[in-house]
Image (tube, rainbow, N blue to C red):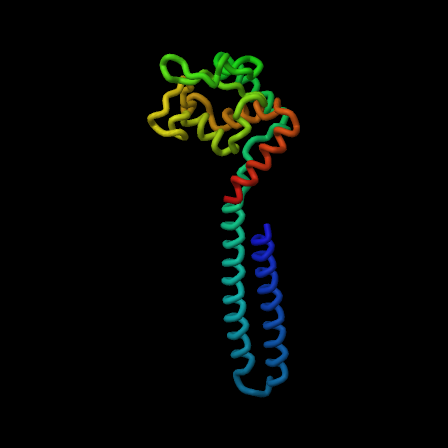
Length: 199
Protein backbone atom coordinates (compact mmCIF):
# COMPACT_ATOMS: atom_id res chain seq x y z
CA UNK A 1 0.00 0.00 0.00
CA UNK A 2 2.85 2.35 0.81
CA UNK A 3 4.46 1.61 -2.56
CA UNK A 4 1.28 2.53 -4.43
CA UNK A 5 1.02 5.83 -2.54
CA UNK A 6 4.63 6.67 -3.37
CA UNK A 7 4.05 6.08 -7.09
CA UNK A 8 0.90 8.24 -7.06
CA UNK A 9 2.75 11.02 -5.20
CA UNK A 10 5.63 10.86 -7.69
CA UNK A 11 3.27 11.19 -10.65
CA UNK A 12 1.49 14.14 -9.02
CA UNK A 13 4.82 15.87 -8.32
CA UNK A 14 5.93 15.53 -11.94
CA UNK A 15 2.66 17.00 -13.20
CA UNK A 16 3.02 19.99 -10.85
CA UNK A 17 6.65 20.42 -11.91
CA UNK A 18 5.65 20.52 -15.58
CA UNK A 19 3.05 23.23 -14.98
CA UNK A 20 5.57 25.32 -13.03
CA UNK A 21 8.27 24.83 -15.67
CA UNK A 22 5.98 25.88 -18.49
CA UNK A 23 4.78 28.93 -16.54
CA UNK A 24 8.40 29.89 -15.81
CA UNK A 25 9.39 29.57 -19.43
CA UNK A 26 6.46 31.74 -20.53
CA UNK A 27 7.42 34.47 -18.06
CA UNK A 28 11.03 34.32 -19.25
CA UNK A 29 9.89 34.44 -22.84
CA UNK A 30 7.69 37.50 -22.24
CA UNK A 31 10.47 39.33 -20.38
CA UNK A 32 12.91 38.88 -23.24
CA UNK A 33 10.49 39.19 -26.14
CA UNK A 34 12.75 41.72 -27.78
CA UNK A 35 15.30 39.07 -28.61
CA UNK A 36 14.90 37.54 -32.06
CA UNK A 37 13.67 33.95 -32.05
CA UNK A 38 13.21 33.84 -28.29
CA UNK A 39 9.50 32.95 -28.49
CA UNK A 40 10.30 30.11 -30.87
CA UNK A 41 13.04 28.81 -28.52
CA UNK A 42 10.66 28.98 -25.57
CA UNK A 43 8.04 27.08 -27.57
CA UNK A 44 10.57 24.36 -28.35
CA UNK A 45 11.61 24.15 -24.71
CA UNK A 46 7.95 23.91 -23.64
CA UNK A 47 7.38 21.03 -26.04
CA UNK A 48 10.52 19.27 -24.88
CA UNK A 49 9.67 19.73 -21.21
CA UNK A 50 6.08 18.57 -21.75
CA UNK A 51 7.27 15.53 -23.70
CA UNK A 52 9.73 14.53 -21.00
CA UNK A 53 7.12 15.13 -18.32
CA UNK A 54 4.50 13.07 -20.14
CA UNK A 55 6.97 10.20 -20.51
CA UNK A 56 7.81 10.29 -16.80
CA UNK A 57 4.14 10.37 -15.82
CA UNK A 58 3.47 7.40 -18.14
CA UNK A 59 6.32 5.50 -16.48
CA UNK A 60 4.93 6.32 -13.04
CA UNK A 61 1.46 5.11 -14.04
CA UNK A 62 2.92 1.91 -15.52
CA UNK A 63 4.87 1.31 -12.30
CA UNK A 64 1.68 1.84 -10.28
CA UNK A 65 -0.23 -0.70 -12.39
CA UNK A 66 2.55 -3.28 -12.10
CA UNK A 67 2.84 -2.71 -8.35
CA UNK A 68 -0.92 -3.06 -7.95
CA UNK A 69 -0.85 -6.39 -9.76
CA UNK A 70 2.13 -7.66 -7.80
CA UNK A 71 0.50 -6.85 -4.47
CA UNK A 72 -2.98 -8.03 -5.42
CA UNK A 73 -4.63 -9.73 -2.46
CA UNK A 74 -4.29 -13.50 -2.26
CA UNK A 75 -7.83 -13.62 -0.89
CA UNK A 76 -10.00 -15.27 -3.56
CA UNK A 77 -12.91 -16.65 -1.58
CA UNK A 78 -15.93 -14.54 -0.71
CA UNK A 79 -18.05 -16.23 1.97
CA UNK A 80 -20.10 -13.05 2.41
CA UNK A 81 -21.44 -13.16 -1.15
CA UNK A 82 -24.84 -14.87 -0.85
CA UNK A 83 -25.24 -15.60 -4.54
CA UNK A 84 -21.75 -17.09 -4.75
CA UNK A 85 -22.27 -19.16 -1.61
CA UNK A 86 -25.62 -20.46 -2.90
CA UNK A 87 -23.98 -21.55 -6.14
CA UNK A 88 -21.21 -23.15 -4.12
CA UNK A 89 -23.70 -25.11 -2.02
CA UNK A 90 -25.25 -26.50 -5.21
CA UNK A 91 -21.86 -27.49 -6.63
CA UNK A 92 -20.82 -29.03 -3.32
CA UNK A 93 -23.98 -31.15 -3.15
CA UNK A 94 -23.44 -32.40 -6.70
CA UNK A 95 -19.66 -32.90 -6.71
CA UNK A 96 -18.28 -33.11 -3.17
CA UNK A 97 -20.86 -34.30 -0.65
CA UNK A 98 -20.66 -37.98 -1.64
CA UNK A 99 -17.15 -38.15 -0.15
CA UNK A 100 -16.80 -35.14 2.14
CA UNK A 101 -20.30 -35.47 3.63
CA UNK A 102 -23.52 -33.54 3.26
CA UNK A 103 -22.62 -31.60 6.42
CA UNK A 104 -18.93 -31.29 5.47
CA UNK A 105 -18.15 -33.89 8.15
CA UNK A 106 -15.79 -36.00 6.03
CA UNK A 107 -15.41 -39.76 6.15
CA UNK A 108 -14.87 -41.73 9.39
CA UNK A 109 -11.29 -42.09 10.63
CA UNK A 110 -10.10 -39.62 8.04
CA UNK A 111 -6.65 -39.39 9.65
CA UNK A 112 -6.03 -43.17 9.32
CA UNK A 113 -4.81 -44.60 6.02
CA UNK A 114 -6.81 -47.39 4.46
CA UNK A 115 -5.41 -50.71 3.29
CA UNK A 116 -4.66 -49.16 -0.11
CA UNK A 117 -2.54 -46.48 1.57
CA UNK A 118 -4.94 -43.65 0.79
CA UNK A 119 -6.51 -41.36 3.35
CA UNK A 120 -10.30 -41.04 3.61
CA UNK A 121 -11.87 -37.74 2.57
CA UNK A 122 -11.27 -35.16 5.32
CA UNK A 123 -13.98 -32.90 6.73
CA UNK A 124 -14.32 -29.39 5.39
CA UNK A 125 -15.89 -27.99 8.55
CA UNK A 126 -13.81 -26.39 11.31
CA UNK A 127 -12.70 -29.80 12.61
CA UNK A 128 -10.70 -30.45 9.43
CA UNK A 129 -7.61 -28.78 8.01
CA UNK A 130 -9.06 -26.93 5.00
CA UNK A 131 -8.78 -23.63 6.85
CA UNK A 132 -5.05 -24.28 7.39
CA UNK A 133 -4.38 -23.49 3.70
CA UNK A 134 -4.61 -20.16 1.83
CA UNK A 135 -7.16 -19.58 -0.92
CA UNK A 136 -4.71 -19.94 -3.79
CA UNK A 137 -3.56 -23.36 -2.59
CA UNK A 138 -7.15 -24.55 -2.10
CA UNK A 139 -8.03 -23.42 -5.61
CA UNK A 140 -4.99 -25.18 -7.08
CA UNK A 141 -5.57 -28.38 -5.10
CA UNK A 142 -9.21 -28.58 -6.17
CA UNK A 143 -8.51 -27.79 -9.80
CA UNK A 144 -5.41 -29.93 -10.35
CA UNK A 145 -5.75 -32.57 -7.62
CA UNK A 146 -3.71 -33.33 -4.48
CA UNK A 147 -0.79 -34.81 -6.42
CA UNK A 148 -0.18 -31.43 -8.08
CA UNK A 149 0.37 -29.94 -4.62
CA UNK A 150 1.83 -32.84 -2.62
CA UNK A 151 3.86 -34.43 -5.44
CA UNK A 152 3.18 -36.94 -8.19
CA UNK A 153 3.73 -39.91 -5.89
CA UNK A 154 0.84 -38.86 -3.64
CA UNK A 155 -2.21 -41.06 -4.22
CA UNK A 156 -5.72 -39.85 -3.44
CA UNK A 157 -9.29 -40.72 -4.28
CA UNK A 158 -9.97 -37.06 -4.97
CA UNK A 159 -9.95 -36.25 -8.69
CA UNK A 160 -8.65 -33.11 -10.33
CA UNK A 161 -11.64 -30.93 -11.24
CA UNK A 162 -10.04 -29.15 -14.18
CA UNK A 163 -12.37 -29.80 -17.11
CA UNK A 164 -15.20 -30.73 -14.73
CA UNK A 165 -15.69 -27.46 -12.85
CA UNK A 166 -14.90 -23.94 -13.98
CA UNK A 167 -12.66 -21.72 -11.88
CA UNK A 168 -15.79 -19.76 -10.95
CA UNK A 169 -17.51 -22.90 -9.63
CA UNK A 170 -14.40 -23.95 -7.70
CA UNK A 171 -14.27 -20.50 -6.12
CA UNK A 172 -17.98 -20.75 -5.33
CA UNK A 173 -17.75 -24.15 -3.63
CA UNK A 174 -14.74 -23.08 -1.57
CA UNK A 175 -16.54 -19.86 -0.61
CA UNK A 176 -19.51 -21.96 0.50
CA UNK A 177 -17.24 -24.15 2.62
CA UNK A 178 -15.64 -21.11 4.24
CA UNK A 179 -19.06 -19.56 4.92
CA UNK A 180 -19.84 -22.47 7.28
CA UNK A 181 -16.82 -21.87 9.53
CA UNK A 182 -17.18 -20.01 12.83
CA UNK A 183 -16.19 -16.32 12.71
CA UNK A 184 -12.92 -16.90 14.58
CA UNK A 185 -11.83 -19.63 12.14
CA UNK A 186 -12.66 -17.35 9.21
CA UNK A 187 -10.63 -14.52 10.76
CA UNK A 188 -7.65 -16.82 11.18
CA UNK A 189 -8.01 -17.93 7.57
CA UNK A 190 -8.11 -14.29 6.42
CA UNK A 191 -4.90 -13.67 8.36
CA UNK A 192 -3.35 -16.71 6.67
CA UNK A 193 -4.21 -15.20 3.28
CA UNK A 194 -2.56 -11.93 4.30
CA UNK A 195 0.60 -13.83 5.22
CA UNK A 196 0.52 -15.63 1.86
CA UNK A 197 0.18 -12.31 0.05
CA UNK A 198 3.19 -10.79 1.80
CA UNK A 199 5.57 -13.60 0.75
